Image (cartoon, rainbow over all chains, first blue to last red; front, side):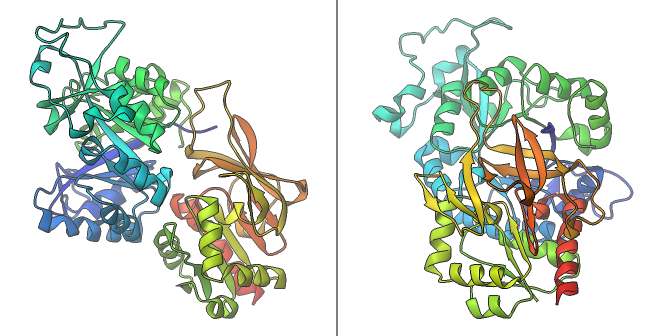
Amino acid sequence: MLAKRIIPCLDVRDGRVVKGVNFVNIRDAGDPVENAIYYDEQGADELIFLDITASHEKRKIILNVVEKTADDVFMPLTVGGGIKSLADIRELLHAGCDKVSVNTTAVKDPYFISRAAEKFGSQCIVVAIDAKRVDNNMSEATGEDWFSEPSLKGVCLDLPSKIPPFPPLLKGDEEGLWALSTHGGRKMKLIDAVRWAKKMEELGAGEIMLTSMDKDGTKDGYDIELTRTIAEAVTIPVIASGGVGNLEHLYEGVVKGKADAVLAASIFHYREYTIKEAKEYLKSKGVPVRL
Amino acid sequence: MIAIVDYGIGNIRSVEKGFIKVGADVRITSDPEVIADAQGVVLPGVGAFKDCMRNLDNLDILGSIVKEIEKGKPYLGICLGLQILFTESEEFGFCKGMGIFKGKVVRFKFDDNPQMKIPHMGWNNARLLQRPPVFNGIPDKSYFYFVHSYHVVPEEENIVAARTDYGIDFVSMVWKDNVFATQFHPEKSQGLGLKILKGFSDFVAGNH
């Protein structure tokens, strides 16, 4: 039986882990390779490096990180952040990563995903979706150059009639509405997150990494309604992300949210739980995991 | 020396690094002479069947791989490297494979169950039906990492070495004589995966 995956995520800036695992048996908490080995030994199912390096000149550093990690860690490795071209993807795959996660570049140019999938195969193209519940802030939401294109029109939010003022949605509303968000949740796009996920699947994405920007950093748990809505809308695997504060949240993500994999960062970095504890907890509740 | 066939697609670096980790002598190559000189051949692969066949053909190495397999040289196929051993694939219309084994490569179909995601991606168990030498020390029902949308349907049941449950009980490993092939990725399956790479490298050394 296919196991639900538990995926730790490491933020990497200029080749150093930000918020690295803080503990004694690692010589260098900022070293991505040491962190990767730590999670490998704990039985993580995959690993994601999110490259938050701002300067384009320093982008090559991540390639070195991937290469060194792949020398010692034999599990699937995804790299996200700053991927702008097919050449960027080729370099990362060649360095030893298995999948790349694309966000901003897909929003700017949706057909980038079809070109990438055609070139490298859907299995290595993950689309990262940062979604946020539609509220009154939508009045400042912006569109994209491709909005008039007939083939893509289906994903646009039809807002001028609704905004302003946009009726605020109540928490737990049956008919949730989410828009894409950029800049860490500060800006909104006039793009419907659910229809966007379907469009990305149609264009060749092999997996969706879904982050709720409402929940990210709250430790309140995933946005279950968002996760379930998108997991049921697409036939490719969905990784739930954003908001994990305890092990019950992981359980909710896979069972109520119907996610195929759950991503968490801080609960593992700060050693609140080990990956093994998380898996044992899920197993005790009847979720198939690899132990 | 074991030749890892480079045909322009697929993440061959991981396979190379896996073999290096277990102390094997490997070389990445697309040169038919190197493949002929090697004591074993590894064909890794992710991506599309058709591209794989086309690239191998364009590089003029398809024929030499088939020839080496027919001569009895140990072969390890991974993912596409398994599928390509079969007669034909339904991917993008029909395309021909190497024809080492009779059978087809077909896509997962879960029309009546949208909860079953395609690709089949993640860790799943391999139920061993046979004990190929490269599986020394691998417990039954061990977890391995899979990522694929197509699977093989062999005509001969006796080549099936392992099956895995994903909606259907599909073939996750085949074995006949010196030909071993896995649908999963040993190079991405942590310690147990490396054990298979070691098993193949030991088999090659013993065979030579």
